[in-house]
Structure formats: C-alpha cells, structure tokens
Amino acid sequence: MTTRPMERGRLVTRYSLTTSPLYPAVHGYLAPLNLPASPTADEAEPDRFFGRILPAVRREVGRYGSVAEALHTVAAFVERGQSEEYLTAFFRIREAEEEPAAVYVSTVYARALFHLARTPDTESFAPNMRRLLSEPVPALARLRSLLAAWPEDFLGHLVAEAAARRQENPFFRERLDHARELFEQYSGPTASWCGAEARPLSVIGPGRLDSPAALPAHLALAMTLYE
Image (cartoon, rainbow, N blue to C red; front, side, top):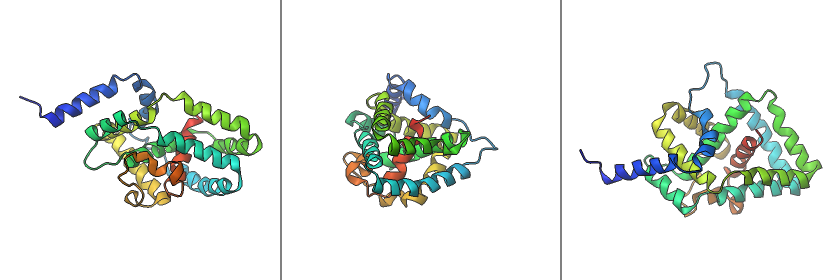
C-alpha cells in the first residue's frame, strides 16, 4: 500500500519536528496541555483575572515608557519567531485552513490559563509589573534574558507542533479550542485580525500593536515566562 505524497510529506515533517534539537523545550512548554483538564479545574477564575489585569496593563502602556518598551520587546520577539523553515513545516502539517497566528494565540493563552490556575496567588504577575515601574532597567533586562533563554526558532517550532498535536490529541484540541473561544472576548473574532501575511506573526508585531489581539497575546506569553 503506497502513501500519497501529501501524507508522506506530513509524516516526514512530523518526524522532523519530534527529532529536532528544539523539541525538548517545545514539549516542556506544551506538555501541560496534553492531558484532559481536571474535573475540579476551573478556568473561569484565571480568565476573569486575565480580564481584570488586561485593562490595567493597557493603561500602564500609555502612561509608562518602561511598560511600553516591555510590550515592544515581546512583540518584536514574537514577530521574528517564525522562520521560513518552520512556517513551511506548519503549512505542511496544519489542519484545513488554520492560520499560524490563530494557533499561536490559542496556545499561549491556553498555557497562561494553566499557569494562572495553578499559581497559589493569581496576583503573582503583579510584582513583575510593579518592578517595571519602580526598577525599569533591571526589570527589562530580566525580561530580555527570559526571552533569550528560549532557543532561536522556538516559537516557530511551537506553532507547528501545536498544530500537529491539535489533530492528534483530543484533549489538546479541546484545551486550544476553549482557549481560543475565551481569547476572542478580548481580540474579537480571529478572522477580523488574523490576515494572510507573508510573516503571519507580524499581525501582532511591533508595527501592529493597535491590533485588538496584540496586547492580550503578548500579556499571555509574558505570564508564562515568569513561571
């Protein structure tokens, strides 16, 4: 029985992702989403906390240069995070017409909700925000060092791997789809901001911080940095 070229291309791409040197770091980030949510887990409170802090952060971006610089730093990291190689891998492995930016925001928001649900004090992110105001130089240096700790192409691999797992693991799919539904209350419908760009993550890059998806997406990623 022969394998059709498209299926063979997907299998080869899947194998390449799992044997990449980046795979352990990517798996470590995604692993908490592989299992079904606990019957006692409640994502409503983490989502409500996120919804409360988002307007506060939006105000601080307009008032404090250090917060605006932190947002720009994360946005620049995200925009350059998907190389042509990993973008090609994504399109070979994706389901139907999935867009990289939509998979990205679903993944980081699902991961942020997981983090917030298991943090004893959901206000733990607040000290990092206060540090940006009181000690901006070391706070920004720490942010940059945390981003630099992720390997080059980490986000590109992450998005491709998430697209693959979403097809293979029903629990992973459920978590990402639920996260996307919750995220859209902040960003609006995905189709309204997620365009067909040559560099897909540029839709929330430094030049598109006015996108309704940009700030919530970057805030979600930042929350997972401080674990």
